[in-house]
Amino acid sequence: MKKILLPIVIAALLVVVTWFAIGEMSPAQERWYSMEQVSQGKEIYSQYCRDCHGESAGGMFTWQTADAEGHYPPPPLDGSGHTWHHSLSLLRKMVREGGAPLGGTMPPFEGKLTAEEIDAAIAWLQSLWPVEIYTSWRDQEQEIGY
Image (cartoon, rainbow, N blue to C red; front, side, top):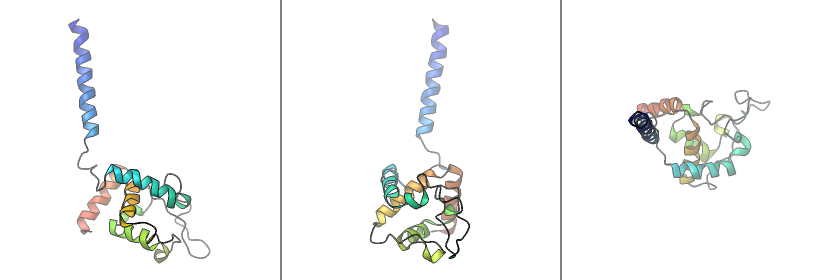
């Protein structure tokens, strides 16, 4: 009986320890936003951003190539493009003011989305970023002091 019970107890302890380790975020995984913001942001993205940036925020395949008018297609926002190189303040500004100043065609959302809704949309996008990408972005934010 003891021979059977000991492996079960050890396995149960490993499950509990793993569960707590997954539930707890390491400093590399800590994010500025809450899960409530992510949930709200997913809805906002679906309503305002999905048609151009894609269901999973993957953007257009040709996002790095300007069209005949010199406009760039919607980029990926899921961490696979250049979005993670932008500060939080610039991301907020791009959503508020639109993409025209940077060569894009994204419309401005000022007056359509509140500051809290913009933050929620950004939170959802950043929740898609792999830990390594988010950590690099966060370190850049802290270094520059945005």
